[in-house]
Structure formats: C-alpha cells, structure tokens
Amino acid sequence: MPEGRSPISSARISTGDVARHSFAIVRRGFDIDEVKTYLQSVARSIEVLEQREQELREAVAEADERAAHPVVDEATLTASLGQHSAQILRHAHDEAAKIVVQAQEGASTLLREAQAQANEIQAQSEGASAERVAEAEIHVANATKEAREAVERIRYDALAEADAVIARAKDEGRVLLEQVHDARKRVMADLAGRRRALSIQIEQLRAARDEMAASVQGVRGSIDTILTGLERSDDDARAAGLAAADQARLHVPKDLPEEESVPSVEAGEDPAHGGVTPSVDELFARIRAGTDAALHESAATADAEEADSGDGDDFGDGGVSGVTADEAAEGEELSEGPDQALIARRDELLSPISAQLSRHVKRSLGDDQNRLLDVLRSTPNVGGEALLGPEDLHLSTFTSAAQGHLADAFAAGTVFGGATEGSIASGPAVDQAAASLSRTVVTMLRRRIGDGTDGGEEVAERVGAAFREWRGERIERLVGDFAVQAFSAGVAAASSSGGQLRWVLTSPNGCSDCDDNALAGAVAVDEPFPTGHAYPPAHSGCRCMVAPMTA
Image 1 (cartoon, rainbow, N blue to C red):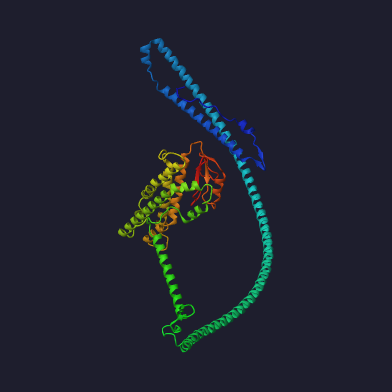
Image 2 (image 1 turned 180 degrees about the vertical axis):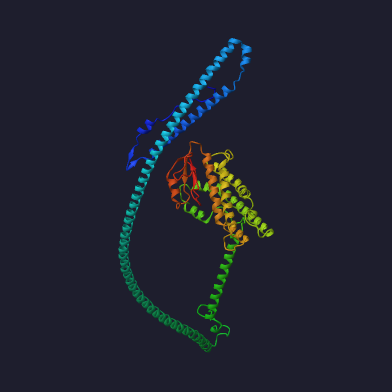
C-alpha cells in the first residue's frame, strides 16, 4: 500500500443490529427524536461504506496503473544486476501480478458485500423511516386535535369566566352608583342646608351693614352739627371778645395813662397770662406748618439713608461688609454666649477677608457683564458660545478673583488654630473652594444667559437679568459660605493629626445638623462630624465654626 493512503475503514452497522434495535415507547407511540437519531446513524454507516468502496476502487486503479507502467525496465535491470537478479525480478513481477489479482478479487468481493449491506440497510431504514413517519404523522394529528379541543375548552371557560366577571362588575357598579347617588343626595342636602344658613347669615350681615351705615350717617350728621356749632362758637367767641374789648374801653379809669390801659383783645393778647393768645385759625395754621416740616424732615432723612446705603443696581464696592443682616442679628443673639470670645476672634480675622472677597467677586461680575454687553454692541445677534466664550476661560476669571482671598482666609484659620502665620501651605482646600465658587457662579450665569425660552426675551435682557440675580445678599451669602469653608479648613490643618475639634454654634436658631455636630463634642481631626462634614459650613448660610479643644 502506498504511503499516505488511509486504511480502509471497517466500521459498519450489521443488519442484525438494525433488526434487533428497539426504541423507547412514549405516550401514544415511539420517540420521534430517537427514531431520527437512529436513522442518522444508519445514514452515517452507509456513508462510511461508500467511502470504503471508493478507497478500494482507488487502490485497484493504482495497482493497475503501476502494473501497466512499471518504473524500471527489465533489460536495464538485467544488464545491471545480472541473470540471477533478473530471475528474482521476474519472480517478483509474477508475485506482484498474483497479489494484484488477489487484491482485485478481494476488492470486488468487499465491494459486492458492502453494496449488498448498504442496499439492505437502506431498504430497512427506508421502511422503518416510513413507518416512523406515519406514526409521527398520526401522533401529530392526534396532538393537534387534542390541542384544538383544549383550546376550545379554555376559550369556553375564559368566556364564561369573563361573562361572570362582567356580571359581577355590573352588579358592583350598580351598587356603587346607588351609593354615589345616595352620597350625592346627602351632600346636596348638606350644601342646601349650608346655603340656607349662609343666606340667613348674609341677610343678617346686610341688616347689620344697613344699621352700621345708618349709624355712620347719624354720626356724620352729628359731626356736621358739631362742626357747625364749633364754627358758630368761634364766631360767637370773636363777637364776645370784641364786645368785651369795647366794654373794657368804656370802663377804663380816668387817672390811667392811655398807653397803660387794658390791652386790646382785638390784637390777640391774653390779659390773664401776660402773653399773646392766638386765634383758632392761627393754631390750625401752626399745626399744619409743623406737620409739613416733620414730613419734609422725614423725607430728607430717608433720602440721606438711601444715599448712604448705595444704589444696589450695580456691582459697586460701597457698603460691602461680608456679613448679611441675618448674620448680624445672629451675632447679637449670641452676645452673651460662652463662646462669644472665640466668635469675635473669628469675625475679627475673617470679616475683612470676606469683605475683600465679596468686592473682588462683584467687580469681576461687573467686568464680565461689561464684556458681554460690549460683544452684544458689536454683534447684536450673537449668542451661545460665541457670546459667553469658552467655559474654562470663564471659570478661570472667577477662580483667580477668589483664590487669593480664600488663601488669606485659610491662613487666618491656621492662625486661629494656633499655628504660626505662613507655616502651613493652603494646599488643595483653597483650590477646591475657589473652583467650587467659580463653578457655582459661572454655571448659573451661563444657564440663565443661554436659556432662550423666556418668550422672546432679548439676549441683552437675559444678560441683565442674569447679573441682577447675583446682586446683593445672594453673592455675599455665597462668598461667605466659601470664606467660612476656607477658614475652617485652615483651623483643621493647624490642628495636629491626633488633635480634636469641636463644632461651635454662632446662632441659637441653627439647623438640626449644626445642633447634632455641636452635641457630638470633641471629634478627632481625621474623623467627620455626625452629619458627615469635616468642618463648616453644613448648609448654605451656615456661619458656625470649629475650634480646637484647647481653645
């Protein structure tokens, strides 16, 4: 056999195996999957036999080719090897011819057997397949019939159940409808009763109103009568005064000089008190003059206070203290507290820095507003990124404005904590505070200016509205929050790693978080307070502080 040729396969399924093979019986017949599996194995056996037959045919063809076309010439071999070698070669040729004949006969025999077995197996498999297919068709038909019957039963049951549910729902709906009607009748009756009661009350109020109107009319008539009487009394008093003056002139003593006679009441003098008695008209004139003077004085005072307080419509530097009115009130409430000395010390260190930070941030807001308005003047229809500019550049403007002052607040906190000034670097705490402050301001500005859903609002109007929202107490409160944060970070940094801090309340009306932190007492520097905060602020507007336990 030549090298590289695969051996002839002898794997096959005998006819006895096929005949004796049994199948598992399932409900109403054989298992169809098992039948298909066995038929596939029979097909593979037939395929193996066909491959065996092809191999034998190729071997016979190769042997015939080699026998018909020997590679070495006998005359050449005889001349080369001699007579004895030639005999050996002829004997080998004879043996080879015999072997070829035997191989051809064996191959023919094997081919006939394989063909017979394949035909027999194919016939048996076809018969078994036909039987199994027929049985499978019968089973499928029965299963289909049963499934249809089951579907019909389920459908009938579902329809019956649905009809029952609908009937129950209708009954419940009728009951509910009756209950609703009864409730409506009760409510309407109650409303009618209330309406009658209200109508009676209204009638009573109207009667009382009419009585009050009549009383007012009577009082008005009485007042008119009194005023008329007062006018008559004034005229009568004047007439009586003139008569008394005339009578006094008639009874002046003869020996008195004329200039020392009784003063004339006509000029408004009061003989009994030695002064001038003003008339009723003069008194009312003086009262009106005094009232007008008081009003003018109040208006002047209000104008002066308004001038001192500043305009408030721009980002000016005047009047900025870094502490809101609420914070000042809180400080007054704690004027008698045990930690007032610490709070006063903190305010002494932090208030100037907060004021400078507030002024600087407001100045940056004003510059930014002027920048946007300049862009709008040059390009009226610009918007979006072209107007606002890159967000990173926008953030850096406010970050640079706040970072230096927040570093000062951090340094003040280290001094408050007991460290030497400048001995502790600010580190990431100041950078984070400055970045957070600028992010808050820039995000709100860009969102407000970039929002074009305000119903036809012009870009310039949105710019003005956005910057107006940051004026006054809002920016001061935000700046105060981050100033307190940087200061508190400095206090914590000045404390040693094993030190302890306590939460100090600056207002008795603080939030529950601040109260919880204050009640926690001493807390290690490396651990957070009960609310999770390492130091104030715990919320917007929080002005609490932390202090070392030695303070």
